[in-house]
Length: 105
Length: 174
Image 1 (cartoon, chains in turn cyan, purple):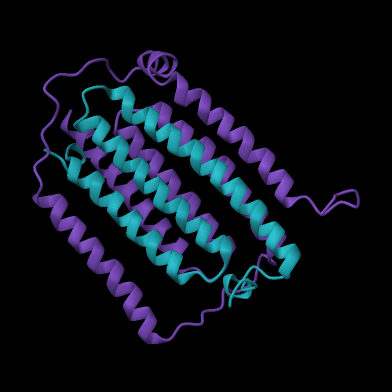
Image 2 (cartoon, helix red, strand yellow):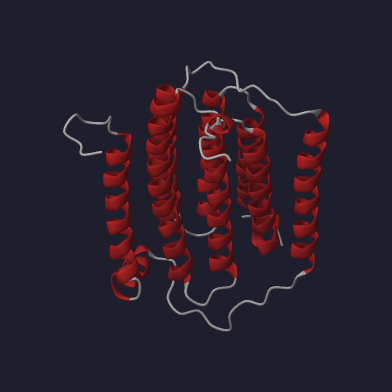
């Protein structure tokens, strides 16, 4: 059995993408940088769905459909967040998450 | 036969290395433009894994939507908000860095050991196969509601993005 025939290999890659994305969300200090890392986490979720679909699921169409829905949601989310970033940049003249503190008590 | 098998395995590991390299570049680069390029490399690696998982259609979709659309949109966002060469300045001390990396590494190790120890049992029998026909039939029969909803969600997201990003107009009541 080659490593590419094991479900665990793919799941470890998915876990790697999840935690790298999480670390990047903490590390990047700009809104766009955090959005980039969210995309990494979503792609890791897609890898997990496809791996379970190939090795475990009874119907191979289900996992592919879920991954395609994740792709659609990720595209919509990126569009919304980027328009928010543009609006924030116009209002505050900065994309630093710590500059947006108008509601802070 | 075995030669092709080993060749395929080497390509598989090449894709995993692409994912790891791209992910680490995404996290470590201080230029946001480099982070987006790293993200694109990682997505190409993910598309290669989808090929190995029996779905060339999803691999192509991954390249089209993620590399082709989302990454280009992110580049637009960077161009509007920053100068592309702006350095992401870090304001955390060494203590915070240790906390963040320690948490992520510990979580990864915990999850990986759990994954290795778990025995997954495959489904007793398969219905359908990996062909494009089966996927298309599933989309237009079982998942037709979700399939239509996702297009409505995309439409509303694009409309909302335009409305949010539009500069305030003179005629607006607010």
